[in-house]
Image 1 (cartoon, rainbow, N blue to C red):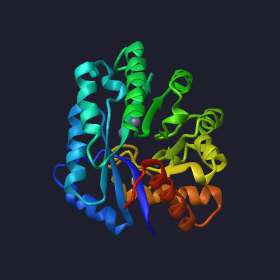
Image 2: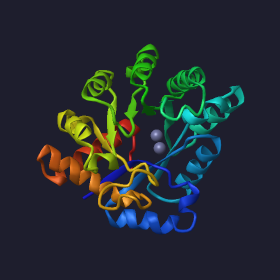
Image 3: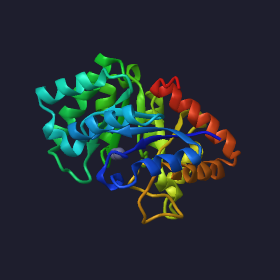
Length: 257
Ligand SMILES: [Zn+2]
Ligand SMILES: [Zn+2]
Protein backbone atom coordinates (compact mmCIF):
# COMPACT_ATOMS: atom_id res chain seq x y z
CA UNK A 1 0.00 0.00 0.00
CA UNK A 2 1.36 3.39 -0.99
CA UNK A 3 0.42 6.68 0.69
CA UNK A 4 1.54 10.25 0.06
CA UNK A 5 1.87 12.82 2.83
CA UNK A 6 1.12 16.00 0.87
CA UNK A 7 1.97 18.41 3.70
CA UNK A 8 4.75 18.12 6.26
CA UNK A 9 7.35 20.41 7.82
CA UNK A 10 10.26 18.01 8.21
CA UNK A 11 12.66 20.93 7.80
CA UNK A 12 11.59 22.27 11.23
CA UNK A 13 14.11 22.10 14.13
CA UNK A 14 11.80 19.57 15.86
CA UNK A 15 13.24 16.97 13.44
CA UNK A 16 16.89 18.01 13.68
CA UNK A 17 17.87 15.06 15.82
CA UNK A 18 16.19 12.24 13.92
CA UNK A 19 15.09 13.46 10.47
CA UNK A 20 16.55 10.49 8.57
CA UNK A 21 14.94 8.03 11.00
CA UNK A 22 11.55 9.74 10.63
CA UNK A 23 11.80 9.49 6.83
CA UNK A 24 12.81 5.84 7.10
CA UNK A 25 9.82 5.10 9.35
CA UNK A 26 7.57 6.78 6.79
CA UNK A 27 8.92 4.54 4.01
CA UNK A 28 8.39 1.46 6.16
CA UNK A 29 4.77 2.57 6.60
CA UNK A 30 4.33 2.88 2.81
CA UNK A 31 4.70 6.66 2.73
CA UNK A 32 7.21 6.84 -0.11
CA UNK A 33 6.51 10.42 -1.07
CA UNK A 34 6.41 13.42 1.28
CA UNK A 35 5.91 17.04 0.29
CA UNK A 36 7.81 19.39 2.57
CA UNK A 37 6.05 22.74 2.64
CA UNK A 38 7.83 26.08 3.00
CA UNK A 39 6.33 28.95 5.00
CA UNK A 40 8.91 31.71 4.77
CA UNK A 41 12.18 32.23 2.91
CA UNK A 42 14.43 30.25 5.29
CA UNK A 43 12.05 27.26 5.45
CA UNK A 44 11.55 27.38 1.66
CA UNK A 45 15.31 27.11 1.25
CA UNK A 46 15.43 24.28 3.79
CA UNK A 47 12.55 22.45 2.08
CA UNK A 48 14.35 22.61 -1.26
CA UNK A 49 17.55 21.32 0.33
CA UNK A 50 15.66 18.44 1.93
CA UNK A 51 14.14 17.49 -1.44
CA UNK A 52 17.64 17.38 -2.91
CA UNK A 53 18.97 15.28 -0.03
CA UNK A 54 16.37 12.53 0.46
CA UNK A 55 14.74 10.47 -2.31
CA UNK A 56 10.95 10.72 -2.27
CA UNK A 57 10.86 14.23 -0.81
CA UNK A 58 9.45 17.10 -2.83
CA UNK A 59 9.15 20.71 -1.71
CA UNK A 60 7.08 23.87 -2.03
CA UNK A 61 8.15 27.47 -1.59
CA UNK A 62 6.04 30.31 -0.26
CA UNK A 63 5.31 32.77 2.50
CA UNK A 64 2.69 31.82 5.09
CA UNK A 65 0.08 34.45 6.11
CA UNK A 66 1.81 34.65 9.52
CA UNK A 67 4.84 36.15 7.79
CA UNK A 68 3.02 38.02 5.03
CA UNK A 69 4.79 41.27 5.95
CA UNK A 70 8.09 39.72 4.80
CA UNK A 71 6.92 39.45 1.21
CA UNK A 72 8.51 42.47 -0.44
CA UNK A 73 9.68 42.67 -4.07
CA UNK A 74 13.03 41.16 -3.17
CA UNK A 75 11.47 38.18 -1.38
CA UNK A 76 9.09 37.61 -4.30
CA UNK A 77 12.04 37.50 -6.69
CA UNK A 78 13.85 34.96 -4.49
CA UNK A 79 10.70 32.78 -4.38
CA UNK A 80 10.43 32.96 -8.14
CA UNK A 81 14.01 31.78 -8.57
CA UNK A 82 13.53 28.98 -6.03
CA UNK A 83 10.31 27.90 -7.73
CA UNK A 84 12.24 27.00 -10.88
CA UNK A 85 14.24 24.28 -9.11
CA UNK A 86 13.64 20.68 -10.10
CA UNK A 87 11.81 19.29 -7.09
CA UNK A 88 9.60 22.27 -6.31
CA UNK A 89 6.02 21.17 -6.95
CA UNK A 90 3.89 24.08 -5.68
CA UNK A 91 3.75 27.60 -4.30
CA UNK A 92 2.78 27.45 -0.65
CA UNK A 93 1.74 27.59 1.93
CA UNK A 94 -0.04 30.83 1.18
CA UNK A 95 -3.39 32.21 2.27
CA UNK A 96 -5.13 33.91 5.18
CA UNK A 97 -5.04 33.29 8.92
CA UNK A 98 -7.55 35.44 10.82
CA UNK A 99 -7.25 33.27 13.93
CA UNK A 100 -3.73 34.33 14.87
CA UNK A 101 -3.68 37.58 12.86
CA UNK A 102 0.13 37.59 13.06
CA UNK A 103 0.25 39.95 10.07
CA UNK A 104 -2.28 42.72 9.38
CA UNK A 105 -5.16 41.36 7.28
CA UNK A 106 -4.70 43.74 4.35
CA UNK A 107 -1.05 42.68 4.12
CA UNK A 108 -2.06 38.99 4.28
CA UNK A 109 -4.48 39.54 1.40
CA UNK A 110 -1.83 41.32 -0.69
CA UNK A 111 0.74 38.55 -0.10
CA UNK A 112 -1.88 35.94 -1.00
CA UNK A 113 -2.74 37.70 -4.27
CA UNK A 114 0.92 38.21 -5.22
CA UNK A 115 1.77 34.56 -4.66
CA UNK A 116 -1.25 33.33 -6.61
CA UNK A 117 0.05 35.51 -9.44
CA UNK A 118 3.52 34.01 -8.98
CA UNK A 119 2.07 30.49 -9.20
CA UNK A 120 0.37 31.41 -12.46
CA UNK A 121 3.63 32.82 -13.84
CA UNK A 122 5.75 29.79 -12.97
CA UNK A 123 3.03 27.27 -13.82
CA UNK A 124 2.75 25.59 -10.41
CA UNK A 125 -0.32 24.77 -8.28
CA UNK A 126 -0.86 26.39 -4.87
CA UNK A 127 -1.08 25.03 -1.31
CA UNK A 128 -3.62 27.19 0.50
CA UNK A 129 -3.79 27.81 4.25
CA UNK A 130 -7.14 29.20 5.46
CA UNK A 131 -8.00 29.64 9.10
CA UNK A 132 -11.22 31.46 10.01
CA UNK A 133 -11.07 33.42 6.78
CA UNK A 134 -13.45 31.49 4.48
CA UNK A 135 -15.13 34.51 2.93
CA UNK A 136 -12.01 36.50 2.04
CA UNK A 137 -10.15 33.35 0.95
CA UNK A 138 -12.93 32.51 -1.50
CA UNK A 139 -13.17 36.08 -2.79
CA UNK A 140 -9.46 36.19 -3.56
CA UNK A 141 -9.41 32.68 -5.09
CA UNK A 142 -12.23 33.71 -7.43
CA UNK A 143 -10.73 37.10 -8.21
CA UNK A 144 -7.37 35.49 -9.08
CA UNK A 145 -9.09 32.70 -11.08
CA UNK A 146 -7.54 29.85 -9.12
CA UNK A 147 -9.42 27.40 -11.32
CA UNK A 148 -6.78 28.14 -13.99
CA UNK A 149 -3.91 27.65 -11.51
CA UNK A 150 -4.97 24.56 -9.56
CA UNK A 151 -4.17 23.59 -6.01
CA UNK A 152 -5.23 22.28 -2.66
CA UNK A 153 -6.96 23.59 0.45
CA UNK A 154 -4.61 22.20 3.07
CA UNK A 155 -5.86 21.00 6.47
CA UNK A 156 -9.42 21.60 5.38
CA UNK A 157 -11.50 22.45 8.46
CA UNK A 158 -14.38 24.54 7.13
CA UNK A 159 -18.02 23.55 6.57
CA UNK A 160 -19.69 21.71 3.70
CA UNK A 161 -20.74 24.93 2.00
CA UNK A 162 -17.10 26.06 1.83
CA UNK A 163 -16.06 22.59 0.66
CA UNK A 164 -18.52 22.81 -2.23
CA UNK A 165 -17.30 26.30 -3.19
CA UNK A 166 -13.70 25.04 -3.26
CA UNK A 167 -14.61 21.95 -5.29
CA UNK A 168 -16.43 24.19 -7.78
CA UNK A 169 -13.14 26.05 -8.26
CA UNK A 170 -11.46 22.73 -9.11
CA UNK A 171 -9.46 22.60 -5.88
CA UNK A 172 -8.55 19.45 -3.96
CA UNK A 173 -9.22 19.22 -0.22
CA UNK A 174 -6.49 17.81 2.02
CA UNK A 175 -7.50 16.23 5.31
CA UNK A 176 -5.19 15.59 8.22
CA UNK A 177 -5.07 14.47 11.83
CA UNK A 178 -8.03 16.60 12.93
CA UNK A 179 -10.39 14.23 11.09
CA UNK A 180 -9.47 11.52 13.62
CA UNK A 181 -10.36 13.63 16.68
CA UNK A 182 -13.42 12.56 18.65
CA UNK A 183 -14.76 16.13 18.71
CA UNK A 184 -14.47 16.59 14.92
CA UNK A 185 -18.00 15.46 14.08
CA UNK A 186 -18.70 18.36 11.68
CA UNK A 187 -15.49 17.80 9.76
CA UNK A 188 -16.16 14.06 9.60
CA UNK A 189 -19.52 14.90 8.04
CA UNK A 190 -17.71 16.97 5.40
CA UNK A 191 -15.32 14.08 4.63
CA UNK A 192 -18.31 11.81 3.99
CA UNK A 193 -19.66 14.23 1.37
CA UNK A 194 -16.46 15.12 -0.51
CA UNK A 195 -15.80 12.77 -3.45
CA UNK A 196 -12.68 10.61 -2.98
CA UNK A 197 -11.52 11.89 -6.38
CA UNK A 198 -10.87 15.29 -4.76
CA UNK A 199 -9.29 14.18 -1.46
CA UNK A 200 -5.63 14.31 -0.46
CA UNK A 201 -3.97 13.10 2.74
CA UNK A 202 -1.61 15.13 4.89
CA UNK A 203 -0.10 15.27 8.37
CA UNK A 204 1.11 18.89 8.77
CA UNK A 205 3.90 17.29 10.86
CA UNK A 206 5.03 18.17 13.51
CA UNK A 207 1.52 19.54 14.31
CA UNK A 208 -2.00 18.09 14.53
CA UNK A 209 -1.03 14.54 15.46
CA UNK A 210 -3.84 12.05 14.76
CA UNK A 211 -5.47 9.81 17.32
CA UNK A 212 -4.09 7.60 18.97
CA UNK A 213 -0.82 9.59 19.14
CA UNK A 214 -2.50 12.94 19.81
CA UNK A 215 -0.33 15.15 22.02
CA UNK A 216 2.96 13.79 20.68
CA UNK A 217 5.03 15.08 17.76
CA UNK A 218 3.41 14.23 14.43
CA UNK A 219 5.32 12.50 11.60
CA UNK A 220 4.52 11.39 8.03
CA UNK A 221 4.16 7.68 8.94
CA UNK A 222 0.98 8.67 10.83
CA UNK A 223 -0.78 9.70 7.62
CA UNK A 224 -2.02 6.12 7.66
CA UNK A 225 -4.36 6.94 10.57
CA UNK A 226 -5.96 9.64 8.44
CA UNK A 227 -6.39 7.21 5.54
CA UNK A 228 -7.97 4.66 7.91
CA UNK A 229 -10.39 7.26 9.27
CA UNK A 230 -11.48 8.30 5.77
CA UNK A 231 -12.03 4.65 4.83
CA UNK A 232 -14.14 4.19 7.96
CA UNK A 233 -16.18 7.37 7.38
CA UNK A 234 -16.84 6.53 3.74
CA UNK A 235 -17.24 2.82 4.43
CA UNK A 236 -14.85 1.80 1.68
CA UNK A 237 -11.67 -0.32 1.75
CA UNK A 238 -8.46 1.34 2.98
CA UNK A 239 -6.79 0.17 -0.22
CA UNK A 240 -9.19 2.26 -2.27
CA UNK A 241 -8.46 5.37 -0.18
CA UNK A 242 -4.71 4.80 -0.57
CA UNK A 243 -4.84 4.25 -4.32
CA UNK A 244 -7.15 7.13 -5.10
CA UNK A 245 -5.53 9.75 -2.83
CA UNK A 246 -2.09 8.78 -4.11
CA UNK A 247 -3.27 9.17 -7.71
CA UNK A 248 -4.83 12.54 -6.80
CA UNK A 249 -1.59 13.80 -5.26
CA UNK A 250 0.38 12.71 -8.32
CA UNK A 251 -2.08 14.54 -10.52
CA UNK A 252 -2.25 17.88 -8.70
CA UNK A 253 1.49 18.12 -7.98
CA UNK A 254 2.53 16.60 -11.29
CA UNK A 255 4.70 13.92 -9.66
CA UNK A 256 6.17 11.47 -12.11
CA UNK A 257 8.01 9.29 -9.60
ZN1 LIG B 1 -1.10 25.68 7.34
ZN1 LIG C 1 1.71 23.62 7.28
